[in-house]
Image (cartoon, rainbow, N blue to C red; front, side, top):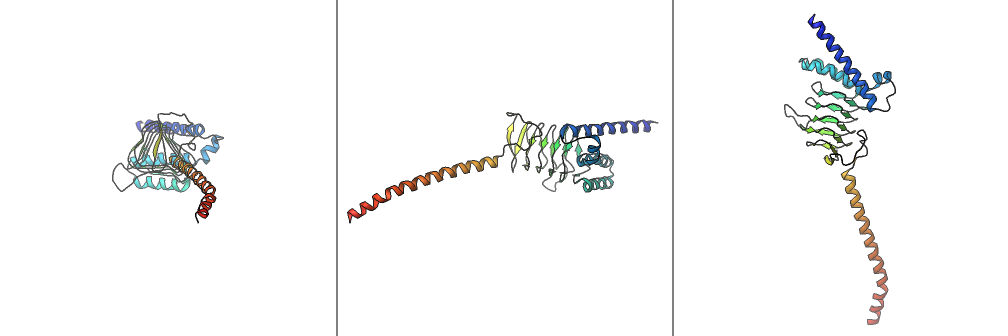
Length: 241
């Protein structure tokens, strides 16, 4: 009797989680048109549901079966989530192809992950070796967060950034290696607008181009002055002879 009640509660909780996952898709993806489409075609949703099953088995030490489920999910969705990873509520994986989430990774609530993201380690050390992602974090496509450190709440990780050290809350990180370029929200942006972030490499290239243009202008001015003075120098030389 007690086991039946416990199983019923677990089933109700799982159904509630699935409803929350579907609602999260509609809140984060303007392309989502209907319930049928979301349930049957969103690979990020399928990967998350498969992970919940695999993680439950992993916690019960059924490691091989958990890995088999995660590998089947990887084959079907292109998203690899290790069964040991801990994932919070309302995770949204958009498109998802190429996403890798490591064994000791921890992800908070209301996190958005785009395609090609890696939450991985940097070596063969034992124990905690993958990042901890805070709440309300957006990780842009192609970003790599590598190592055992924390990404604070309300952070934006720019597309293709490579993050190798802790990031304080309310920060924007871009570049390779990743650098904090905005903190505590001086400029307010749409949390899903991960394409319009400042890029320190681009800024440096623009500054170099500006200096090159100035040098070219100075060189051209010098050439004009030399052309003007050339006839006078020749006349002076002839008179001396």
